[in-house]
Length: 371
Image 1 (cartoon, helix red, strand yellow):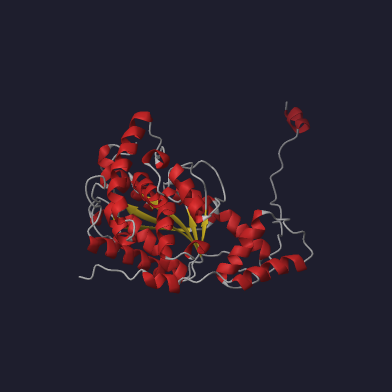
Image 2 (cartoon, helix red, strand yellow; image 1 turned 90 degrees about the horizontal axis):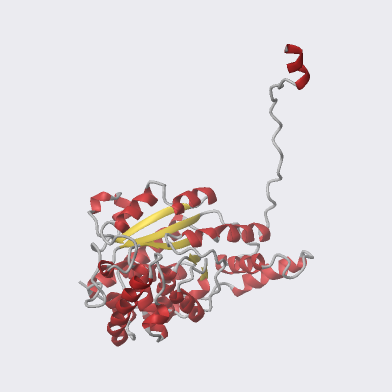
């Protein structure tokens, strides 16, 4: 089976967002007699929406999708997370699917659909619906401090799976993706990728992830240090890097981000996992980051380093570290507001509902007369 993916084509296929549409949106705002910068960040976001949509006036965001790639990681067995290595990811997937996870509740509040793509959860595929496991590559991954996460063939399949998901979403009419992940041990893997690509040591990219204490932080730091030694020899080959010290979810997300940019589908990044994959994708197509926005700052040092390299500024800083797309989802109202404020269509006027007739409650005088 072919284990290669032609990464060079992305450099030519990924174009910049429409700069003329961006300028038209800014000029339209000025022509309306409104003060420059009067809406602050919403103006910049509205201009970005115009550029990625390739049109002005902006079309309001109407079909947002929370997209969560799920996978287990071998390094979780080392105890680098407070979440249980065995069954922890599967439990999180079930919580999203049954609507009890925070991201599911918030998505319902904000009018966004939620999609989970299981690429390497360490569970029986029969545990989840067919559409969730349709792109599964394997169960779990190798322990990246001592072995490769994936084989070359699995890496290529995962990358292509992410591309396929991007095509599916673009064809379905999704107009904004809120990109997150589900996986125990994933922040350790992200730290390795960011540390390797930014040339930093382990301590500079080791965060607290799931809320670990000092002892576990030292274990996590040592794991990232050992994994970095395995990552550096393959830095020049992005697919090899994803297979050696990444995982099926990291390969799939990277493929998704690049194909989404090809399909002109804008993406809001969530946590350090999405940031690490974006950093890999930037190495493949330098214009791709213009199709993305950083939803939030999680406080993870690796995420901050990745965003600095990508020149992306987080839209919010709510200190959310749980992943699951929650931070990206909280940025959705800002983007919806930006789209609505700069859209051409007049909103439906608010008409208060007629007050319902309420039953008359007895007055104090009525009560006294009964005494």
